[in-house]
Length: 413
Image 1 (cartoon, rainbow, N blue to C red):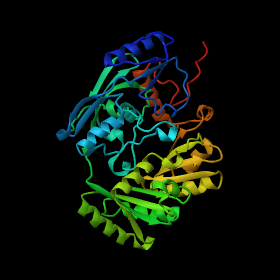
Image 2: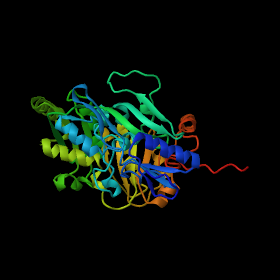
Image 3: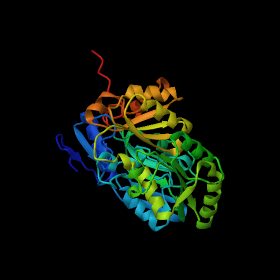
Image 4: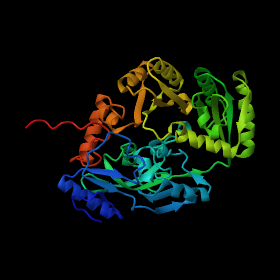
């Protein structure tokens, strides 16, 4: 591996080479852009870095014990390769990490396990299964000081002090360079089905999803796909706005719970059923935000609010701006595509008006990403804690500088 100023990429193939690259950059005070295969590099504020540290060559499984439900891999290992191995053993990542690639105009399947944890990915099962941080068991990483650090372990029952593994989740490569990730995996459901209610308003859909999630039906996922987006799912086979509820497990159990749930939701109208293959396709498209993966750079926001308030937020925004939207996580995750510009201040004011939440600008032209807070601004105490962590792990500020927040101008001498 070359570590000479002016090289466009540093591509370490071992953890020691990652350490050497970061140590060199720290000594030279050279800012680094940290990437796996670059599938999410367009998320965050544009950075001005002298070098790119790519982990694409640091890949491969380092441990897989199906009976112990534990898997470890080097950080640059593509998720599609890991998920293929898991599927061969009827296992999966329960939290269903999304693939940002198509939404950002990239090919699908380029995300890595390191990027998965750095972005704290999750999918439609987030309501029941949590996100990547809830399933990580341990990590190895290189800090901005050029030091190799290990946290956690390779067993499910792991009890430690401060859990750096979870602390790096959602840090977007600004605290340390992940080199190895150890995750908990779980058995794959034997089958699944999706119950569909057609033609509900956003408000009625929210009520139906709330009733279903509070029932004994063990609903794994709940989403609402309004009229404006319904034609962009499962090859245009949804005739009207669709409220969709996912059931997973053994076949007889899924059948029984489906019938009970259909009876419970009868006041909202008749139900239809999507069976295993079609159900899986639908939820993958919900996960990867297929309606907005349109090859454009029209701004897309990922907004998290209380589940009962998502529809109220969208209604308020539609009075002020042109938007398109659909709902995941029982209405608590709102995907917004701004048709008439993106007013970050107005959006966050609207979020506060419905009780609070947070918004992330996940797709936009560089000019817009440079001019707004891409990630939700942190309140004072949390911002101070984040600053202390950054000072501890990356004191020179060489790792993805400015990606999550604008860099402060140096104080005058």
